[in-house]
Length: 309
Ligand code: RRO
Image (cartoon, rainbow, N blue to C red; front, side, top):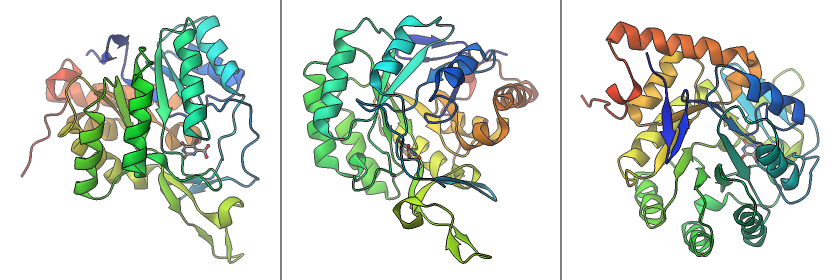
């Protein structure tokens, strides 16, 4: 059974990635991911120009079937991640994630990548729900279009974008129409479901400190939303734009469902955080068992081939 997959011209030995933000902020975490035999590639924590501590704690909480977070973009700063993906001992393809605080910062970071010797994939995060006072850019269609226009006027390396979940079919039509105008390598869907709320009954309190308790929801409870976004975008985007399915993957079955909906790669967030890197080996094995039982040899045998009733 062959789990290899591609984003544009980048070949991955298997389709599994960490979700950005999970096990990819510090040098130690990145090294552990780089040396893990069961993830096909590595995504870095979304970087801002300067390092950030992020939001006050507590800022992550496990839920009965997922998680809620309001990390607030803690990261070591752009140069740290650019150095990591250009200078370290690279064992697998990398996706360098960036998230400036403004369009100007995003353009500046992309200029630096364009002028660097980095030849891997870049992903622009247009969907962080947790920076105090900043909206999720990809919910503003006109601004997203304008930004992509300015980016592709100079940026010639492979670039994808990280999208927030959409919930209305009209919104899928609108975002796809915009994205199809640009030579994107991929879209990564979904980021966490923004601005959820959880309540601790005993203390009658929010569980997160930042933003009055509002935070991005991920993990198993996000799976139906993630599958819908992968499916709806695969039905609308040019075939040259690959899709990274993110959201709610805890088992090989969940990964199989993402691939049926059209995912080229699958990333694992909450489950990786809760279970540790061993999640990659387990989910790989579970997916292989399903494929064997169904007589599938490669992902192309079933990718995007979801049947309708
Ligand atoms: O750091 C965060 O709070 C964060 C980011 Br940048 C993101 O894109 N998604 C998320 O759930 N948390």
